Image (cartoon, rainbow, N blue to C red; front, top):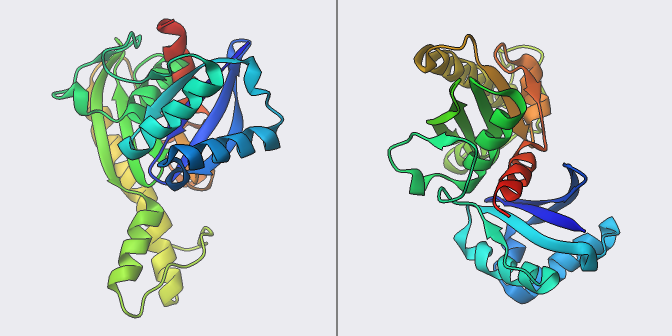
Length: 257
């Protein structure tokens, strides 16, 4: 039997299959297709069909969601598919890390899963940079305390906002510029999007590393859609793990059976 890991993000929702002590990616669907249960059922059934997954083999699902409107419809679908109540990530679960933040109930479930996954894989201190609709940074110290981090507009989100507010500006194609000095308007925007993102992230990581204290320099893991594009240009990111969030869900599910 297998279990399903689901990461409901603002733009897309990622599915993974948990089996044999590991997790494998199944695919993504647009999150907007999950806010209605009937439409969500069609989207998930289609995804499973394309991936060759027999839903009869699934015994439970674990969900991290930052989109409340999609959580209940998808949970209803997964409840029917598996015959079991989905496990929804929250600070009340056994996480394997401590949440030493001011308001743990306000933490995004994806941030919790990232922190759990990173600490389980690498110990502490460790940081996670997740490139999504928002770019988030999670910080876990040597003793396994999640201390918090940062949230700011993702690369695409910032570029779209700039294009929406600038009459003569548009979002250029996403390809890494050879030089930081953009020699055209599109080149300048591309430089700001990508080189600017690296500068912002590396600066934040440097400031945060100085605040963790103890345990030497933190390991920094990047995840999310454009992590493979950005990480090679960062002086602080050590590796890319596109399955990190799903791995965190896998370990949380195992700790809460």
